[in-house]
Length: 404
Image (tube, rainbow, N blue to C red; front, side, top):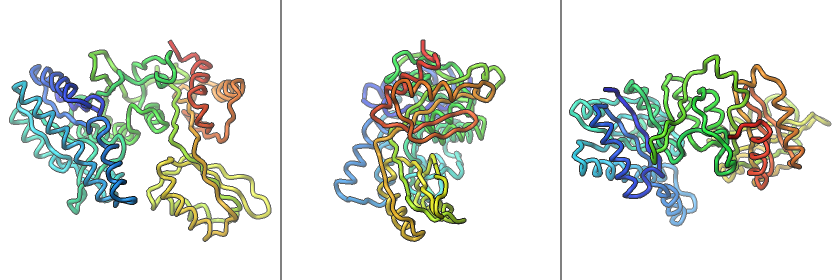
């Protein structure tokens, strides 16, 4: 008998039939003697529907009320999943994030987990129940409901596995693992059997939709080994684990494309200490995550500063940028969406040369212009036009011979 945390995403519980299928899979594991905590997302499309409703009744709904609203999506699914298990003769109980003991900080819509006190979870497990926990949510120390951001159910599952000291964590989704590229863009992409935390973290943060980046970071910190699998079959998935020597034999693990990007340029920024610190501190306080940053060579005491952010953050970021640009005496600023970030990732880049040359040559031969470049020890990212993203992904994937 083992202790397993399973997580099922929105597509896995998207209809009543799929919820019954999940219940059947969970029931099989329970009858095999495993102790089970099951984390579920809202049914596919529910969260987007709730957000649309919110914006229909208010152009700028408060973050607290957004959390109150969105948390109902997962609460709907946990109750339905518990009901489906009851119909199969399985003792099951649904718990909200707060009832499961998940405490977060006070940042609404993008809260971070502060601690988990799973006393009630253990009580139900000890009495033979399958415990169904609402993903994506918790409560802060003031008792207000909070949500963990897009993909937050992954974080709930990983965090619960760490807090409960589960033997394993299984992330069930609509794909049967992590691929060398998005199979919808690159038909020849192949499934990766095993990948390191660092590689998965880079792929997740760079647009791979299989896992939320914060959940991978949490797994690495607390050494939670987990597997990404499909809820629609019983095929082996991709195991995400600690790095080992054999992993460096593979130069590149995958290619990712992140479309939802915007590029901001502040023109004529005074070239003096503290200016950049003030700008990026203000953006951080507004909850805007800044990604790639490029500063031009100073000329006549000023410079141009360009950075990328998530396109969804652009409306709120504009207010901060306008205020900061006026405060520091910048000449002008521009904002552009319709761009994408293409990245190649692999811990083998540490010990193999020529990756950048192959990447840039492949894009050049395809006539795809590079607007910005960013590198780290195990990744290279470039900004390109979003309209060229799918073709660029295929070109680069082929150039590195990653396909089947």
